[in-house]
Image (cartoon, rainbow, N blue to C red; front, top):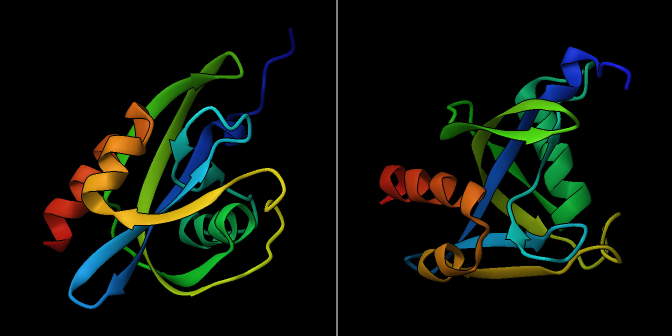
Length: 137
């Protein structure tokens, strides 16, 4: 098996949120296999900052456009491709949800309360929402 390049294991993602009155809502998407709910994330594009790359993932995976914060909410690691991926998660205030987006046919999207998001999301992403909730509320 060929060794994967180091840059492949550096990832970033967002906790896409929006306001509904005084309440915060979180934008979730299904994984590409549709076996659970996740937050948009992916490999950091080599020509982009982690924040810009995370915004690109939010657009492609969730049709969410917005402003990515500069402060990392949380970081975590997981096993993939025979190595350990390191993920930096940023907050992203959503300014627009598109009706059509690149991965619309591959994923579902839902906008839910923080409480509902914590119930729905895969465990590896749960801590990002907990940390976001602690910062935001």
